[in-house]
Image (cartoon, rainbow over all chains, first blue to last red; front, side):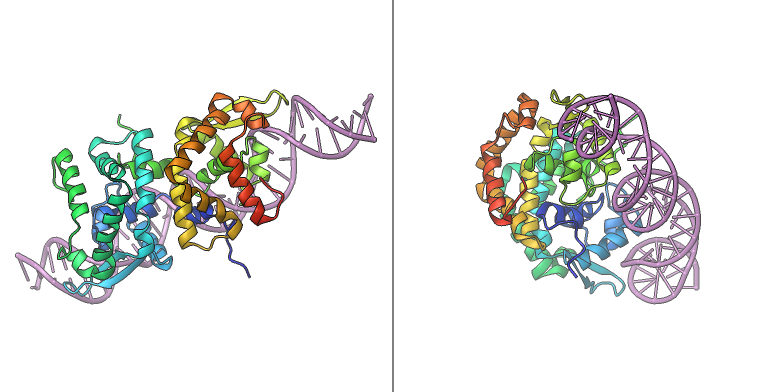
Length: 170
Length: 170
DNA sequence: TTAAACTGGTTGCTTAGTGCAAGCGGTTTG
DNA sequence: CAAACCGCTTGCACTAAGCAACCAGTTTAA
């Protein structure tokens, strides 16, 4: 039988895959917040995702091939979640969404600075960021999760955010 | 009281506004299919939206300020739905989503051609398209709905689609 | 003149997704 | 050896989605 999709339209298929209130939030936290474990994603979530929803989303994103999981060598019970190449290629999508939201919705200044820098940086910055993400999520997911591997772009974005937030997050 | 949002993050606020399976589909049909009435959106929908869902989405998008409605001079009962400026500015978002879906999901050839042309055209084409949409949805919504006002970009996209689909749609 | 078709929806029902709180077996830390 | 932490699961309430039938008013065509 054919696939059980509503249509073969690229926009529709993307909405079928990611068109809910949480999937892109989880990917955003992995991508920009480098939250790589269930507990990090759960407790550091700005929006307060519930554990059963997070569990369901991680399963779904794994089965879609957007995430991969590895054992954490530091803790036998711990899992490292990483972005795969398809998820990394969502950078331009998240940049466009962030730019639109920043213009048309009531965003907070601190949380909007990353969207602004990402928009201003354009495709050149996105490509640099995607290369960093490949190093931290595909080539060396453990190093990326533990801090051995870092991203210059991500450090810049985080620094700009912390300057406005005055704070204690990353 | 503060707004009842999960957070002030641009990506989160966009997902709260448009993060469901249908909102962007409705906007896509208005934008690329020039479906401007309830009936058109309902019956010409590739994905088969239900009438109660369509009704709810139109109400929601109107209240968010992404759509406007006008009386149709040809039919006292008919309503013309139009994109507002914020919705028109979703063009880059839909282009990015379409480009991603085309690369990573099982799209159909005919339905993917628009995404491809939009991606290849880049920001210059998007700007031209957005100007056309302003003429058809903001300046002269009635003319845009009735065919008096047309979009060169949209005609090109539709022609390319019809060539592959062999068909009877627009 | 009247019936058929079309207009933008609504209603009722079932199923799927979201949100919250509590809990669970195993692991590591102090 | 107890407390904290690990990735989850369970249960229950509520909202959103999906389906089919229906509705009153308007236009069209015989």
